[in-house]
View: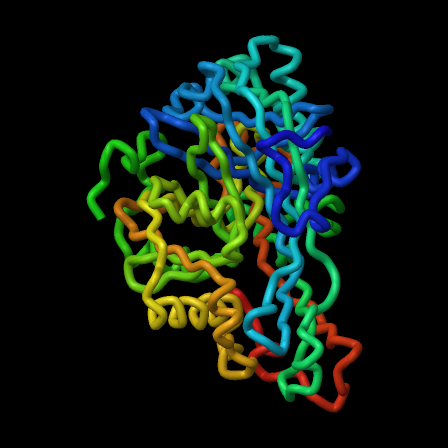
Length: 214
Length: 214
């Protein structure tokens, strides 16, 4: 995607990217996005689940949601997905950093009124959260579909920013006695907790026991 | 904090809270916040490290940063911190959810010009990232302080939203054969990777080997 004045990276441009090959895997790995918008001249923001299909990011929620009804009017939003990959512990406090992958994108919201598109989105939001789950659920009925609002954000502009690798201390600090390096961070699933009201003989599916995020 | 029209929760108010005893631990546990603001009538957003001291959230960065220079003018921002605690796998796709703790807050930015306040912030941002680290670094010199901009966001309004617990399926779905339950998620530190240019006899400090986020 061609950088514009909104997405051109002015600081540390070496960390920036505008290609979908960098941007889309970040969108596909994140669990939650943040959507910011303007209401009555004030900035607002909400964290929300999402999915990507092609060049579109989708969110969904209750038709009774105030903020979704605001977004359903078709307004400009800025959407961010941020993945934390590690702490970067330099010898100097100044060069402390984090390894991360983040995407900022801009687009207008669009209410999804096509039933087939909405169905595909609900499927993909579930599959985005945990691949393999959709076919192992009781899928939405008409009443649930009517209670659900689906919004599209057609990506107009997007940029990624990524920091990887080890510390970057000043040469004159090289011999300082402070341990220097990176502490990688990952999202780790813990032991699944079955609904206590369910028959314990129903075993945990493989897509749960093998769940990982990256 | 008293809810206003900006922070009053209209959907699922049972999940909402406005007390600092709920809000501040969420701010203190997060690694990254998202800050949204308005520029030329458009919503913008940036993910950034931060810390909280009292009723103030602080961010910092390079004095050359375009977005920090914009924020330094003293403008309205909305700031979010979101912690993902687990996947909630209901029998029905409709009742799928996530366990999370999130804070949305509003405030005006303020450029920190007092050297002592700025120093305390840089210390606290480091300690927020990894407690115990500040005293084990080469602390900032005058040149580094001059290159660093510190911004305060005095919290005007804030609200927290929290979902905990197990699935919440419809009673008529109780006997469906789909495994139902929660998959807790945590941020897990991996084996630290020392700067290859550093003497390997410098051992990994206890505050690194014992690092955990919650």
